[in-house]
Length: 143
Image 1 (cartoon, helix red, strand yellow):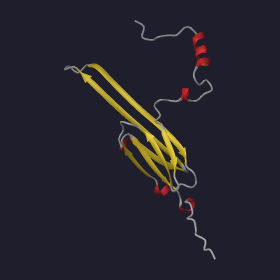
Image 2: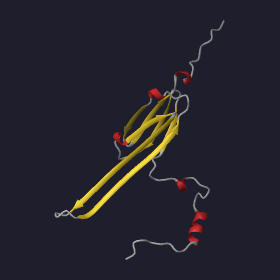
Image 3: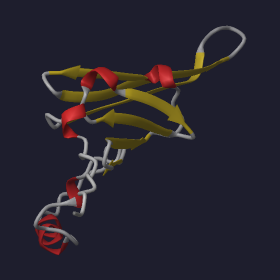
Image 4: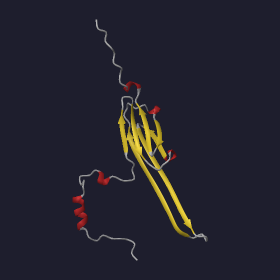
């Protein structure tokens, strides 16, 4: 019994390279186990939303080093089913991990960063420094 499927025809792989929907790069090389991220900016802060359903807040490691924000997670699930005499009938391991790094602008106040995990989304608030906030407009006296 052969458990390894081999593709001995080389021509289709060459043709596949030319017929890929984005053969100039892009999403074809995107790793599906890396969570998607939304980044938005307001006048007072940046917001980072990382989609990671099925995790808990303890699964995340958030670090800041030299204005680089790193978000990582590693989970290990082991499910084991055995017979009465203790021999394995089936044993399944599942390991998932990811690591995302973002260079923070100089305007971010790294001492006031806050993170919340709710509804499968990790929300990270990156407030701006006081000097980066918009200045209030002054009313000029009309004489």
